[in-house]
Length: 371
Image (cartoon, rainbow, N blue to C red):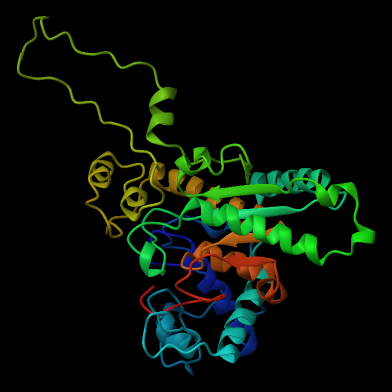
């Protein structure tokens, strides 16, 4: 699980493919979370089934060659372990949309999803309750559509938006097109009043300001409210008014004024610099200035891990809830969108269950070179 990536998506997708590959090659599969940036695997997921053998000694684990008896897989070794399962970037002139290779990568990821993607603890309880509520609200044939909007340091592959983000209207318009297509394909004689009702739109985003965007604020509900990423404005409003120093009052050092560290929120989306600074005042100041892009060399403190766990749990709950809808709209340049494709299944991504709005690529993709 060790990785230099701040995001959880690439690690999760690679973990699933590695599990599927281990099954295909009849290998035992072990998860080593001893140096994972998010803490312990079992904080988020049910423990995987226990193999019939013990883990090999560290001295016998190798990242290559692939035929080695005890193979180590991490984000640093994906390109050697997975080989041609990793696709070139879409704008690479050598890119070819090879259906057989893509289907194999998808099948391996789906095997890992089925075996490993099971939340635990309070999140599992909340998820069960949330999904029951959604089933109740759409029990008479109504539609539910999930919208996954990624901002932050993940930009679209579509060239016209490569330095910005896909417009919100693209998501809402695509959702409406899905509703229209399903309506037109439904036998009119089998329709009930609920088929003509407004579909339930569920929104998940790494940017808290997305929820109040004009395109979404009155038409969507949050995918989940168990854990929310807050903006700086929200954090400031939750704290008491700061006590400003009395500049005229006598002090031992009139030139000294205590500096109060400002809050750093998630407005704009998920940035690696913000993630690595969680729970550490010094790193937090660097993060606020965008100076920390790489994983710190020292181990995270207890507070850092606690905050990182919240970020990871919120992300996983969003994916679980969106994956339960009739259809999902997202941009495939984000790992969250690719994971949602795996959740919806091969028939889902080929039908109306999953819709990519990133015009830089047509269809689903798994792991990509230099991604």
